[in-house]
Length: 260
Image 1 (tube, one colour):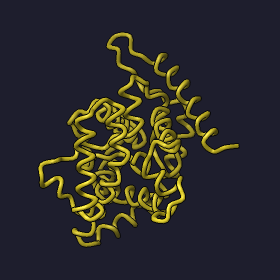
Image 2 (cartoon, rainbow, N blue to C red):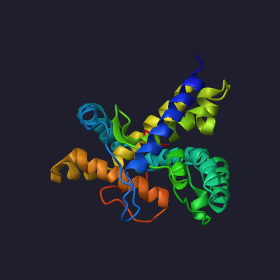
Image 3 (cartoon, rainbow, N blue to C red):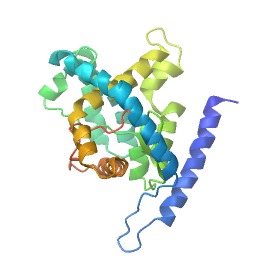
Image 4 (cartoon, rainbow, N blue to C red):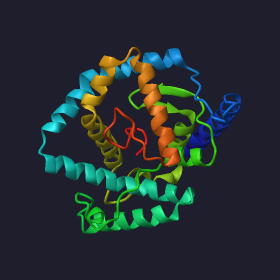
């Protein structure tokens, strides 16, 4: 069966599930929709598995990444952020934020050319600041779709039905970087380029937040619940485009193995 058809059917099912969850969990007093947890036992087991992987692989790799000279790490982070524009721009448009779409398009062109594939950020020095990454999960949120159930995926970490639906949309042709590198057979990129960039985004994010996560784990009565709360707050802030910063994060991107 066609891969895109399967993904489409899966996404359609999640959309219906999320809509039902949102309707059932609306707070009648304030109109605030809660985020239900439908698979807590499974999610906690998956969370424990992810923690073990983090202790064995991801944290040591992130610490090794920190040893690299600052200019190399900054250039790598800039390049990954520049690639992220390819997903952000169509979501700016879908959200009706044409000003941000224009700025991010100019940023991408300038940084890809003058900035040498995004290693440098000349657009920032010209006053064109990055407004922040947008993805299809955020777009669905701005359209009024409820978060649906919260759960934890192996390796990819925390997510919701809405965010998984957004990720599925990326693989259905919504992510230009995925289309260029993996979906279409081009002579310039390989399938591995996409997955390497996603992995590097995760390592870059983890390396910036080693102390924050260690402190959170040390001081949390329930580390799982704390991560859940942070993730949900972070996603809601992004949907509303608020400037408030999640206390334990020094980077604007939570998921990002998941949501580049």
